[in-house]
Image (cartoon, rainbow, N blue to C red; front, side, top):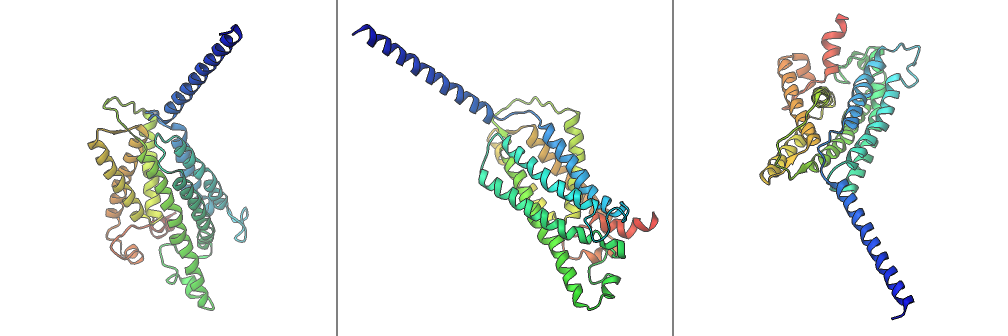
Length: 309
C-alpha cells in the first residue's frame, strides 16, 4: 500500500467519524426537543390570559361604553378592533403551543383546526359587531330577537328574519366554528403532555396558581356567554378519560397538561354555581328553554344590572 493511499484511507475514516458524530448530535438535539418538559409555558399561558380578558371579555365593554362620537354606528367600534386583534394573536399562541407539545399527534389536524378557528372567529366578528351595537338603539339582550320591542315595530316584518339570520351566524355558526377547533387544538396539546416519570416532585409556583384562577374564570365566561357547554363538557370528559387511561399505564401529566386539566375542572365548578344561582329566574328561563339551561352573563347584566347603574 502506498503512502498516498494510506493518507486517503485515514482521511476517509476521519470523515466518516465526523459524519457519525454530526448525526449523533442531531439525534440528541431532536430527542431533547421532543422530550417532555416540566417547564411551565408562562409566556404562552400569560399571553393567552391577557388576550382573552382584554380582547374577548373586554370587547363588548369597550363597544358599549366608548362614546358613539368616537365610533359611530355605521363604523367599526373599538370592540371590533379588539376582536380583530384577538383573531390574530390567539391562533398564533395556539400554533406556538403546538410547537412546544412534547408529542405532536397530527400537524395537519392542528393547522386545519386553527384555520377553521380563524374563519369562525371572523364570522362571529361581523355578527357580534351588529348585535352589540343594537343596545344603543333600544335592543334588549335578555329577550329573543322577535320578542324585542324594537323588532316588533320594524317594517316590513320580514326584516326581523334577517336579524334572526344575523343572530344565527353570531351565536350559533360563528361560535361552533370558533370554539370547536379551539377546544380540539387544546385537547391535542393536552394529549401530548404525558410522560413516563414516576417522580412526584412538582414545582407549581405562584404564576401557575394565579393563571389557573384567572383562566378558569375566563373559561366560565366563555362557556356561558358562548353557549358552548356541550363542546366544553365533551372536551373535559375526553381529557379525564385520557388522563385515567394514561395514569393506568404509569404516565403522568407535566405541569402544562395539569394546568389545562385543572383549569377546565375549576371552570366546571363555576358553571354549576352560576346555573344554581339563576335556576329559578323566570325571564332567563324563558329565553333559555330546554334541558341544558346556561344563561349568558350579558343577558343577566342587561336584565338585572344595567338599570341600576
